[in-house]
Amino acid sequence: MSSFILRKNNMSQIIKTKAIVLKKVDFSDSSRIATLFTEEFGKMSFIIKGARSAKSKIGMLIDTFNVLQIVFYKKPGRDVQIITQADLIKHHTKIMEDLEKLKYASAVIELLLKLTVEEEIHSKLFIGSEKILKLFNESNDMKFLFLKYLMFITKDIGYEINLESCSICETPFSKTKSMKYNHEIGMMCYSCGKDRVYTNEFSLELFNLLASLSSRNNESRGSDADINRLINFLERFLMYHIQEFNGIKSLHIF
Image (cartoon, rainbow, N blue to C red; front, side, top):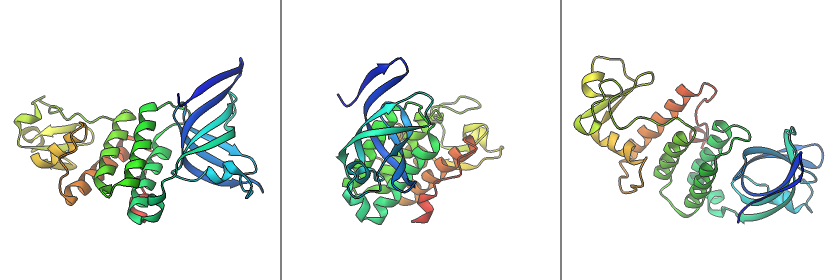
C-alpha cells in the first residue's frame, strides 16, 4: 500500500502518503514551507523545520517535480502541517536538463497550483499528474502529451465539454461538417452556429482531435498548429469559466 492513516486520537492523525512537490519558499532562518499535491488529501501546505540546513535529508528532497513518500502529523484546523519523514520515489533528472521538458512540466505544476483547492481530494488527478511527469521525463512528444493532460485536468475538476451533440439543436456532431464554439452556449453544429457569435471554429479534423483527447486513442496526433490551437482553446475555456485563473504563464515564459 502507498499510504496509511493512523488515528492518534479523536483530533489528529499520522498520515503516510505519496506527494508531488509543487512549490517551496524559505521561511525563517532555517525552515521552508512547501506546497505538495498529495494522493490522499490533494493540495496541502507543509513546514519542514531545519530544511535549509545542509544536513537536512527532508530539505534536500523537497524540490519541484519530485515524487515523495511522506509522513506527516495532520492536525485539524492547522493551515500548515509538519512533515516528519520523507523518502524519494522519483527525481525527474531529464526534465531539469531540457528546456522544453521543463516548460511543459512547469505548466503541469502551475495548473495543479491554480486549479485545485486546498485539501480537496483528487486521487485520479494525482495518478495522472504523476504519470505525465514520468512521461515528460522519458518522452520527446511534449506538446501533445501536455494537450492530453490539459484536457484530462479540465474534465477532472468538473469542466467537461459536451462533444457529443449540438448544445442548441442536439444534432450529433457525427452528422455535421464543422462546429463553432461560444463560451456561453457551448459547442454548436454548423447550422446553429453560422448566425451566432462564436469564439472558435472547428473543422471536422480539429474537432475529431479534440474528441480523441477524451478517449484512450493516442494515434491522432494532429499537426503542430492544431495542437497549439487546442491548447489555446482549452486555456481560454478555463479562463472564462474560472474567474481567478489567468492563464498558463509557464507556456509563455520559457
